[in-house]
Length: 241
Image (cartoon, rainbow, N blue to C red; front, side):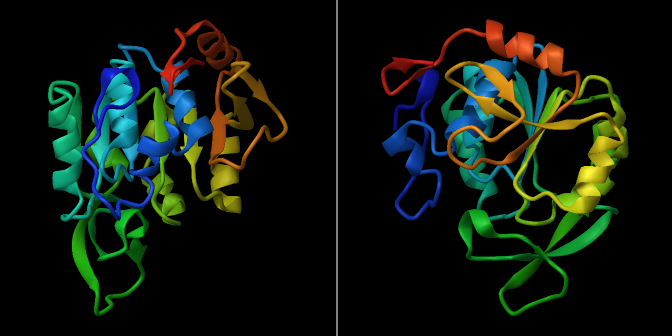
């Protein structure tokens, strides 16, 4: 299906979330407009919990940024790779078929729940073992400019394993589906603050704007705000935003 910025999405019925992009333009409007307005070609974007790659396609296909896409579900990574190849993004995107956590090893991962598959504490009848890595084990000298993390409640452990990434001055934005008190403390100590993004005015607010969205943490707010204000408009369902 044709999508934003001349990109395409390979979807099928039953792909909860991914198919919504076809009907409404962007399934997670504010959350998706944020990287579309913020990212630049020189940036590195981490799509943690990439699923079939909608954020990856926006970051690399529309914005031209490099993306590292993390997706441990073996039934999902071929669909992620398909959307990458479909849009000719193999040179910009690296796929890591591992889960991220607080230590290297293995983890139990649910099956059959689509984008809601997740790490669980103990083996279950419908679970499988997947490789788990600390983000700091993988990144080397590569530090992201923006991280989007949607790992169904496993965000805290994933961030505990990302001390080097969180400390890097290059990292300006982290978006999280789940925020625990420990996460809030961890990011506050590294000078991140919570903001709310209004894509229509291109502004960061201290109070919620519009429909509920993932929590956005920014560091160097003036830098982020200046980028957002000066980015090129993106056409969504015929409207430039």
